[in-house]
Image (cartoon, rainbow, N blue to C red; front, side, top):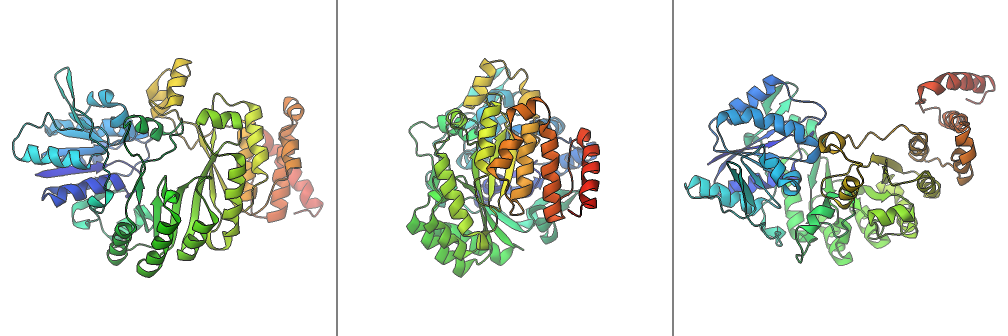
Length: 499
């Protein structure tokens, strides 16, 4: 059976879709993957849609991976492909949490993990059998939705094949043309970074995160599941022998949940059989330990990302973040101890929380002045993803009026340009070059009276000038009203031989 799988995301990593492809190929199906990288804020050109349709002609099933922010793009693709009369199935996190909405557009959807479901579906379709009862698949006949039971989570992750990286069956939208994948395109759209995931599931379920919703869908089942170390190493050893890979990335919510013994085993085998720089995301303050970092740094770890989100105890209760500020301090201290090997860690933060007060933000800013530098502070604008606890709270309080406008099309990288938000970026300009803003200076910048009189902007400008004077490398990025102030201030600083 010929199957077309489509990834609409901005890069070529697509771990889930590649794994589905490998499962189908293991069952002798003919599979092609079309990578159509595009930021969700930009629709596809008509010529691209026509080319995708032409390449899909003759297929017996089309599968598209869907994340909430890419809903518009996938709807656009689906409308064009429906003219072919080929069954279209959506899979991924958005169909899992919004199945009925997605059935308004697709012929079928996959709810939950899709490896077993897609294989059974393809087998029954190829054999001409009734596939309307496949667990994990929802269908729509007329106005009636067929809601089959969800499948249990895959507990033996080692039973799954490694992600599919067969260039001969992969195609990439490069500019305005779709080309067959090759080494150059792989490097262009991955930066030579091979991404994989050693474990599945997150035990924390923070109220703003999609895992909050996913965890609730599988009561009584083991949520965090780990591949064996030998299975992970076998995948990576194969990759380094076949692909132009410069670095390995574990985009894993729970990698640091591996035991110390398993981490030691991994590090010994990684050094021997892989030997490339390693990136680990998804670290949490309660799971980062000195012992594990020591082993990983010795094995080639060069970067760690850890979520802080907020230092306000009130906000962390709202987020159901179970770590304390003391744990964050200890984890940051440990990460800093290994800065010569792993470099500056990245700390994620959340802004634009409608339930967060200015005092909460100030509490976080003051806390961040105490953590070791260098480090990268990476603020995100809170997006209230469907069916999470915070989404439901926002709906009840009337904070979300239109899901499409308020959630799906929101860019989580664009925080509001408020004064306090700008202080997070100002602080990052210091921490990323190893400088610190003292608690005293931050107290001055956040002083309520100065903010009320709007004199805090002058303090902000002076701190920018001071950093520019010390580093000579920072480009001023002030709001328009302050650019004239900046020009006068920097001119005076130069005359005083301060820069």
